Length: 150
Image 1 (cartoon, rainbow, N blue to C red):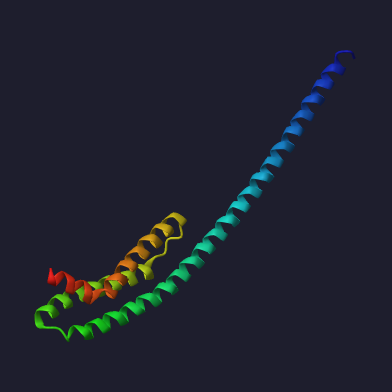
Image 2 (spheres, rainbow, N blue to C red):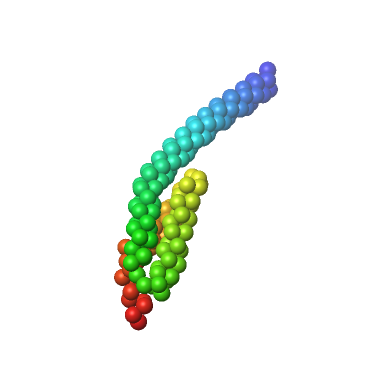
């Protein structure tokens, strides 16, 4: 009997330790599942926010591209008032700017990446190209006149 009591106590102790260990694993599993659910929810929220930002960016820049189209049409009309040599240079230049404007529209329409880093790079590059085009259109005749006189 003296030997059975320590053996029974040891078995009971090991069983209790095993059960306690299982509860910790269960709690860890619950925490991990909760973390996965929260991370998934956070990812969906971030994707939704980026998607909304992309739509807003598209809407704003579609309007700017339409303004560029009107400017290009006005410049084409103004080109006719210049002599033949200047018209040739102006036509070539306005065709290049028109092509750039159409390329920007294509890039805007086809962008579909939802990764934050790629979106930031796209937006920065697009804005830079858009500003360069806008400046070229705003200074179309003055820039050509300066380069022709030099």
